[in-house]
Length: 194
Image (tube, rainbow, N blue to C red):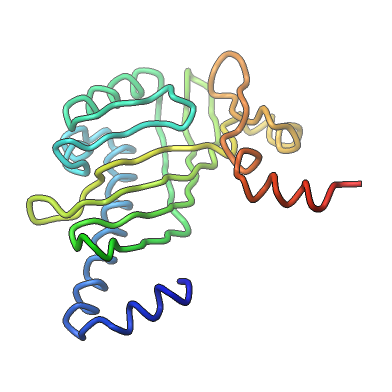
């Protein structure tokens, strides 16, 4: 939490602060529910995680669906190549929109153990989220997936030093982060490696 956000939180009434705590808990439960519904192939549950006009996309552009039914159809396509999976979430930052009490944004660190095209794979990923309170609960209005790596366990030692860490597809692709993040570029421009 930055200093500005901390001072805004203090300016809220006790009721508003309690409502934010409740919303924060509900949003964290939404993120956990998403993992369970994906792993259990509960497509109805997946659909209920998204707003009616919600979207799910990947930073590499492979996935890009808007509208609850289209998002669910996209997951059917993903499940065609996936076997068992186990998704985990770790750090989660939630920021509330000061102008719209039914909107928040979030950043989620996550990883997954999956079987893709009959091969076990590991993935380290981030979700850039937009949340909306719709029909009495918090849902994803937008969820964008990005990868630090997606690879076979045996490739882990060699792949970690290579920008081509996304090996989910036939041809390896560049990782989505951190090399593409502006602060990463700026740091190494100012502090070149020897």
